[in-house]
Length: 416
Image 1 (cartoon, rainbow, N blue to C red):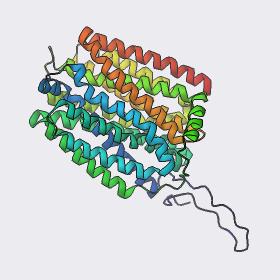
Image 2 (image 1 turned 120 degrees about the vertical axis):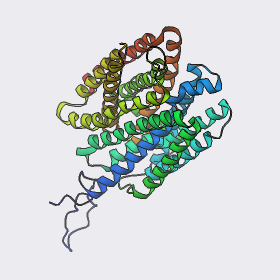
Image 3 (image 1 turned 90 degrees about the vertical axis):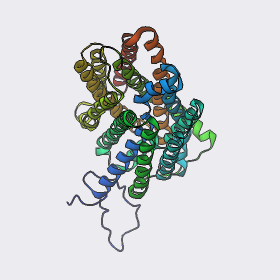
Image 4 (image 1 turned 60 degrees about the horizontal axis):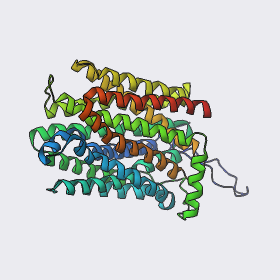
């Protein structure tokens, strides 16, 4: 059978045979539709995370320009992830009612526009307002993209497709940090952020053009009673609440490390420049490999063991950053990034499997916890940095990851 067809072929029917419902069709790997979906959502994930995290490597620059502390500077990221978490409680159910593609396109266009406007703000409070609006807008991409894949892709390739989507997230996070870090050193942070905003706007327009329309979307009611019923069902599930907790702990650990590693490496004995600190974001490239790899491994070993293994790799990575050798620190960042994106890929693809209805709402609850962890832990890490230095930050991250291992072990036992 040819693999160039976009979807599974419909069976033939004799002219006098009784009418039957159309067959269930899914997008298969290797087809033109698969390539369009992969490219569209890869670019959406890339743009989303470039916009969200472009301020992370320039936190020391913002601290200096506006005369604020490390913890206060980190609010420019935490407020985006916090509002993104709150927005997910709205945009997930909204996409269940009005459709996936329209919500994602609108969200990307709004976030790109707010990023460009943020470069015109002259006060710290003005920047924070724009960053809050960026986070709120991007909530319309994160959960909805996961839901689109779980609905439209063939069940055999959902985990692999989710891994490719997450790899786009990893490249986006790296690109945003890399561009803003390097361009700030040569021009200014405003030029750097404006460049990323223009790139994201172009990605949004391409996404709008090439993403196939949903075939399996079925609108559901936005009535509060229906939302409440679905909410209770998600929290009564044996696995979903544990997956929500896992997202909180994994993302909290990840953002904390990358929020403050730049502060450490710009001090003695390294004295790295802003451009070099930005270049260290290439550690994210390990996630481009590990995310689809983890998706493929789940078919052989199961989700639970793969999730635990990559969370353990994260813990090993953060322990390496406690050493003083720059090469060992960078190796730790590579391991940490690879483990995070793989673990997140496994957990996020598990949501669509566990949720029996209102999958958009279930994905939103997972990512609400995920970005709440980013916001709360990312800012809390600043107090550990101020009081105890990098050893304090490393210990804080280590506690989060040990808790993630315990939650993952319980999850595996409950739903295996």
